[in-house]
Structure formats: structure tokens, C-alpha cells
Image 1 (cartoon, rainbow, N blue to C red):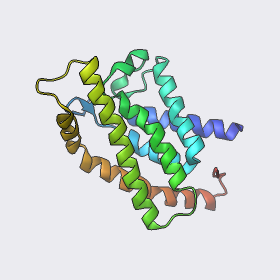
Image 2: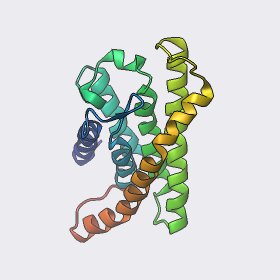
Image 3: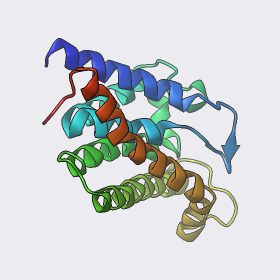
Image 4: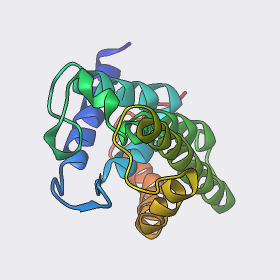
Length: 188
């Protein structure tokens, strides 16, 4: 990797840590509300699939190593046992998919398609992990089922769709602003 690539990956790993803790104590149904989805989309959209996903992997590794970078200032290997850790893992896939789908100058339809893929990846990976965690090692609430796990996500859907739309709308504008200032943009 080039020095510039290492720096921008570290920058997006740091932005994820900030985004995880913008509202450290705002939770809905035990799940913290964060801006991590936005930074995962921006990482993939601006850095490309390889570096975007690498920056998200770096973020996960930093958190698992013990730095308090996950939501609510948590970190360490025990984070794997958290029912919401699947959403953290999904950010790697979100950044990769965003980078792949927006690697060429995209039309508006590509952004809509990317948004659909992003929400699917985030929810499928995160919700399945949450369901498995509650079933196998976490204390499941009374009456918890697969349908309940998915119904919990309905509370987040409007916010997540708004974040996805704003993030995807920002990608071409940021790319254009960086290209006008002769800032190096990574192409895959």
C-alpha cells in the first residue's frame, strides 16, 4: 500500500470511531443510534471497494484490540458477544459493495441500486447475527423470535434510509470537489 492509501484508510477508521459515538447514549430497543452506516458508505464510495473495506476492517480490528471505538465507547474481544456486533461486521461488506457498485461514473439508477444493496447487507448480516446472539449466548427477551428480531429493525428503517440517501448523494459531490482541488482520488 502507498502511504496516501494507509493515511486515508486510517482516516476512515477514525471517522467510524467518531460516528459510532456521536450520540453515545441514544438507543432504540437496546441498539445504539450511530452514523457508522454513513461513514461505511462514504469509505466505499470515495476510496473504492478494496480500500473502503480495508478501512472498515481496520476499524473492527482496532475495536477488537481493546480501543473503545465501538458504539457507547466499547471495545475489546468481548464485543464479539454483543448482539449488535453483526452490524459492525456488516460495515465491511457495505463499504466493499458501495465501492464496487459506484466504481464507474454512475447514473442515478446505480445509486438507487446501491442504496438497496447497502440496506440489505446491513440488515441481513446485522439482524441474523443479532438473532443468533440472542438465541445462543445473550439473554433473549421474553417472546423473542426471528420475526421479533426483524420487527425491531422497522424502528431504524426510516433513519437508515435517510442516512443512505444523504450519504449516496454526497459521494459524487465530494468526488467532484476533490477532483477540482487536484486531491488524489483513489481509483480501482
